[in-house]
Amino acid sequence: MEKIINISSKIENLREVERVIDEISAEYDLGSEVYGNILIASLEAVNNAISHGNNLNPEKDVEIIIKITKGLLKIITKDEGPGFDYNNVPDPTAPENIERVNGRGIFLMKQLSDGLTFHEEGRVSEMIFNI
Image 1 (cartoon, helix red, strand yellow):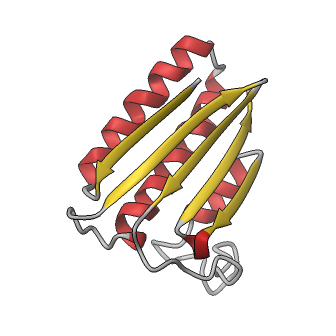
Image 2 (cartoon, helix red, strand yellow):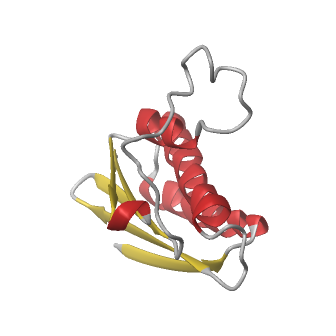
């Protein structure tokens, strides 16, 4: 199974991603913990693409590709931004960052997924989940 979603870079379009994750959860009878992990990590990835990658520019799109094969769900998120140095992201659990409001998205994506990689200078994130 493969689904491709293209949304403009508006925060309200996160609802479309949530709707698709809900449909997949129902179709594949995902448990509540797996569903929650997939939903939160996916929304973080797409929110990062909208907010940081595309700087909330509604003229730029985010593409979300969802693939399910052999007990694995893969979510690929692509933005049109300049990319970022994903090897140099501050640790949100470090004492100097603990009270910061932002900066937890990649940490959550890493913690909630079973694998996270970045491609194309950080413009593409790829998460895998064992389902």
